[in-house]
Image (cartoon, rainbow over all chains, first blue to last red; front, side):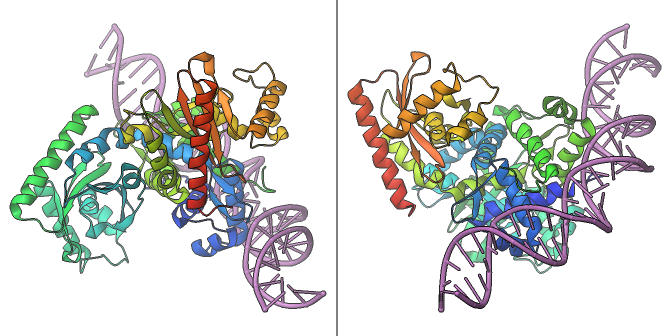
Length: 241
Length: 241
DNA sequence: ATTGTGTGATGCTATTATAGCAACATGCTT
DNA sequence: AAGCATGTTGCTATAATAGCATCACACAAT
């Protein structure tokens, strides 16, 4: 949903910042330009601008990494969102052997896990994962896709393969069921089973999930019950309507 | 250190994003424009552009908050930096009654705490603090200021009051001592004592600290020893030179 | 229900910032 | 030392942006 006059420089600059954050290692300006299929001068100027304001940092090997300004932005936005303060303690209480608890957000056609832990995962590791995963194969992704309109889903997957679904119509059928049930189930490659429920509803700002290698229907129902309980604790804690 | 041709739109857009992240609550486009002393149309367009790419999100009350793209950026940059994975577990081991452990970065003339905990603080709270504090009054801030050149420090505090110091020369004298000692001490309002050491050296990318209400010289020496030990564990873990 | 006020957002167009080409500086490998 | 890839700059034509005026919407007070 672009505004009447989008700021293209800002869009380009944030593409650069995203590539920088997502690269996971120091990256040079030309390498980043190739990654984004961007003219090198432009990439360099955007990177140097980011570095000038402290959001990126150039190292002695001339490559760039996120800088203190990015960490401050990160810390402030996570803090302001309340995702950590309001959600993670509840997820931690759900952990037990054989189970994974997770929270994530929908980012384009992927799920980004902000928290992902089994009962042995130290909290800093659980919160530092930043893993991206196809949304259509993830319970969290599915429940968030279900919160979009059908047209939004069609636009999102326009000219794009959908992991686990033969067509967008198949996906929309699944999403319709999710909306009816109030929760999503995913069994990626039948390796494990995930159930997920969304947080918030206008918009659904994140989703929480429980996974196990195998779940009976009874275990699914129990897990859904637990997630819905956590959801309502979070909802009342945040004073949401 | 501006590049030859900085991108002003990106600078403006990131000012908007920073104000959004730092506001801690939903904020409207005109309110944000007033906060930044920015023409309202410009602020609205930058905000709507951020919303279009998912870094901001507009709520039904028409106000804006950080969006999923911001959380993904946050998660990826913290993950890529290794600050959480490499540092937090070591800090947790230093916790004991009567002691606070912290990690932070220098952001302009302030310290931003990325981790701040006493021995009872749950890890998500410790990592969700995002607190800003005058750098000159903070051990972490001081040790990071000491990693800048004197000219950089003068530029940073040009026409600016320095919390806890009568002049920039007084601060520079303190920073010179910190460089010699290899660690910083701060006693803000004599409420507590903090010792801090920096991580990395070119650049110093963060600093770690221990605080107690009172520290004898022996306790200071012991804390410094512990921090230096953690620093060298982190340094070898990260393969830094 | 109406009025007043503040808000979020758009269209238009003059102006200014940006993009890309060509070139240069730097670093690394052979 | 030469070759190659890298990071970066200056210049200028062009496209994007900024701000004014205006409109749509929401909320509070009467």
